[in-house]
Length: 496
Image (cartoon, rainbow, N blue to C red):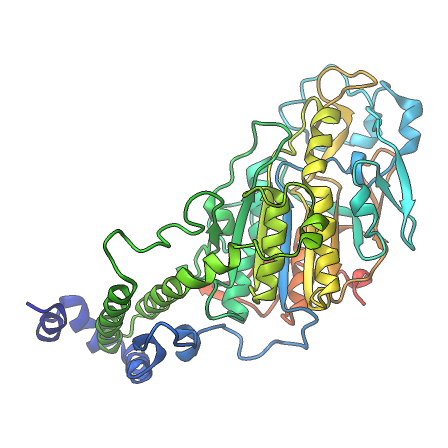
């Protein structure tokens, strides 16, 4: 029996109660069905509008709360926690305290990880790297980051970030979702939910995981870090792969022609449209949209990842690894191409920064991976006029201790986790250029001026996108949830 005919003559128990009890849902279903008839969902491959937008659910906000400064965000996330003491938070006085015990008054009862809490002593380990001043604010940047130093006049360095988590997974989860507990929507999902997509042919939220050359054993990355949590599933990030199909199941199965795939999706859309009409199920509406997006991605994604026509001088800007799939340089070039195509939120993860030992050796390699591509991304966006409405964020989940973990020598040391202060940088629309925010004590252990909590950072990111972080909410299990929970203050000093 024809599946559409069979559906027309059968009614499940769920459908019966759905039609009987869900008056509002049925109203939505009728509206959706009327939109589906003759809509791009049932048209040819070249048809345009986002079906979620057609049905009025492309974003939860009918308009931004304020005039936005930016349209897109790129997050360059250094998973494992870069050492602020060796990169951005220069502490020259520590050279005179080499191998001296860190004063108890500095620790002041703060908790330590179990990896170092049992150490007999906490010897001070000064950075072995040289620093120099750059940009109008005289930002002190390590010799490990010469390309980042070249954009010191375009970035804002926050030296006073702090967090609540002391171990990697809860700290990364906190940074990405605003909660240490798994299950909350990620920042990209919140933006997708609140603002919707700027592009009907690519996902609003795309994720890449770059290769790395530092410490080989690295903290695992779980899909929930870019997941949608309690939000509908269409708001989660779409992971872009460097091997095989850029997105899983992007290619047609063997023996299936593209015209056959189009006919199947049209038929499926009609069936799903009848289901929406019957019970008003919003997940069915989302399913229709996801099928259509997947179809359009069969053309848009291969075009996105094909960098063969990029001019050589642009590739040279990103460094020698730009043509190696999966490298951080390759990911940064793809991020710029995504910005050109109006992808709303782009996340690049770079692992291997968890340097409990052999820090001087491994951090050199990590910085070599990311320094030139990160700076190139900012320069490339600027020269194309895209930096003014894009925000670039660089940083990890927490900082590292001034005291050494394990054996200390002049040439070698390791550092433990430190949530009390760490450094990040931002560049783009609405952000002060060539500015340094916050300060820490002589040991880079405690913040002495202008602290910035994770919730404060997320509130500020939403503000730049025109969103009041207290008003972007999602009702779930009897309460309204938001990215910043019940916290968050704008970091006004870093805004123009």
